[in-house]
Amino acid sequence: MGLCKKLLIGDGITALITLILCLSLGLTVVSRNITSTFFSRCEKFNEYDCQKLWDAFQQAYVNKDPCKVPVEAYDPLIAAAPFKHQCNKTMFWSKTKDVVHGLTAKRNDCFVTLEDTLLGSVLDNLTWCGKEGSNDTFTTGCPGWSECVNNPVRSFWNRSSAAFADVACGNVTAMLNGSINTPFNPTSNFASVEVPRFKASRVKKLNVVMVIQKNAISNCNHSSLKELEANMTKRSITYTCKDVSESRIQECGSKPEIACGACW
Ligand SMILES: *[C@@H]1O[C@H](CO)[C@@H](O)[C@H](O)[C@H]1NC(C)=O
Ligand SMILES: *[C@@H]1O[C@H](CO)[C@@H](O)[C@H](O)[C@H]1NC(C)=O
Ligand SMILES: *[C@@H]1O[C@H](CO)[C@@H](O)[C@H](O)[C@H]1NC(C)=O
Ligand SMILES: *[C@@H]1O[C@H](CO)[C@@H](O)[C@H](O)[C@H]1NC(C)=O
Ligand SMILES: *[C@@H]1O[C@H](CO)[C@@H](O)[C@H](O)[C@H]1NC(C)=O
Ligand SMILES: *[C@@H]1O[C@H](CO)[C@@H](O)[C@H](O)[C@H]1NC(C)=O
Ligand SMILES: *[C@@H]1O[C@H](CO)[C@@H](O)[C@H](O)[C@H]1NC(C)=O
Ligand SMILES: *[C@@H]1O[C@H](CO)[C@@H](O)[C@H](O)[C@H]1NC(C)=O
Ligand SMILES: *[C@@H]1O[C@H](CO)[C@@H](O)[C@H](O)[C@H]1NC(C)=O
Image (cartoon, rainbow, N blue to C red; front, side, top):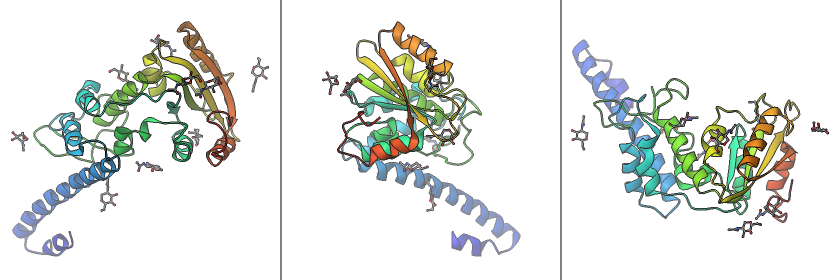
């Protein structure tokens, strides 16, 4: 790219040609970037054919209008790297991402989130999309989470969290945020995608952990949680909810001697 900067100080036509050349070079660099991130994260799992997964990933959105990628576009990717049953370990979260991952990073013997699985960790924090008439993957200029519903990133998280919830069994845990107005928000991925997929034949119990900070404004008594409880009861899934301070959860991460779930 240094060469590009130097060449740009030429006459008009040369500069124009160089500009076009450098722009396409820039795009290639961007796309190689997400490719290498994908492969380096994937290879850590040492378990799957990463090239096969990359191909299945790309076919979901490449050469498509980035506002017309339905959740089903990722079916082949999910089929290529199916989620394993993690009985009693499945951990869901809504608006508590950092504190949850702080915990699961230290207690992976106890809890597994979507972002701890192969597909979730490979695509965590990434943005991607395609364009009609191009086979490239772009990481800038992609539609945002709310710009259009059927965008490649949102559809991926929707599809993968549904598949993750499908295999949940035994005791499942969910960490919700007590510092917001509606901890169990009907528009969240947890409420709209994951909860409806719980199979009553497999999920025995839902343990909600309400993360309470100094500025907490909600707790387990919040009306939205009463709705969640009613929903679980209707489906014969036992429900519990406990208010736990954020500092207590951080402590639990550094106390491997305490049994899973017994820390709060
Ligand atoms: C792309 O590469 C640049 C520089 O090498 C790096 O700073 C950036 O984080 C990368 N982006 C992604 C999405 O990997
Ligand atoms: C999950 O927990 C239940 C209740 O403690 C137990 O009966 C079951 O064997 C556990 N399942 C697994 C796979 O650990
Ligand atoms: C809960 O949400 C608030 C407001 O968005 C945020 O500042 C806080 O970090 C969240 N708490 C946790 C535990 O993630
Ligand atoms: C995603 O970002 C968070 C911090 O914002 C970081 O802790 C986490 O490691 C990132 N995930 C991956 C897979 O790099
Ligand atoms: C995209 O890839 C397909 C299949 O590999 C190929 O037939 C097509 O020509 C490519 N299109 C562009 C614009 O490169
Ligand atoms: C499942 O939940 C019950 C009741 O809270 C608890 O006693 C048991 O230890 C849990 N099992 C596992 C494996 O976490
Ligand atoms: C997830 O996808 C389903 C089915 O397409 C849709 O009804 C739902 O609104 C989506 N939820 C989110 C949070 O994107
Ligand atoms: C309650 O569960 C059903 C599935 O049995 C689901 O369709 C519905 O949206 C849920 N309601 C709430 C408020 O979560
Ligand atoms: C929740 O509501 C019950 C009954 O209304 C009350 O006894 C309890 O103190 C409340 N808990 C909190 C933490 O507000």
